[in-house]
Length: 115
Length: 114
Image (cartoon, rainbow over all chains, first blue to last red; front, side):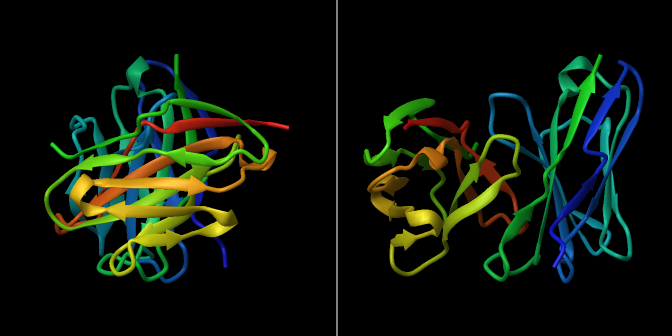
């Protein structure tokens, strides 16, 4: 079974630009969550999506948005990039109503650097 | 707001030493508890998890953790560490909020010297 796959693995953007990060969940997992991990800190919850609907949102500005597609893959979009958006962006997939079934599995992440 | 505290930011041990990493959370409701490990250059991997039942949970690679509800704690232990345990360890809590949100601690960086 393929794990959670994220693309790209690394990305460099300029302040003010827009970025799109992509995630494909484990086969059979219908929920995707996004986290931001700034260097030296633990991951911070951004969004959870299930069945193309936002189920939860963390304390992030409206510049951050996401969507989920019918095949359960997801995109995270960040507009008007700031230097402080530089981080590792993690995607996790799970069964939405039973996290103990198969767990909550993270991808390897996309390392975003804003210059 | 819910939070998770990991008291040790950096830990240095010699091989065969015992390990205990502290984790406390602030939330009065039902919680699910996790420990994740992040080896250098690798993604977050689940070490162990607690949902209900026996508060002493055994995970992979000889790790275990004990949930003490009265202390809001979920400390990670290993009787004898190896050089390959060098990694960053994150405690995380999933609250019963109607959706799955993990709240992570700031992590503990463990260095095991051979």
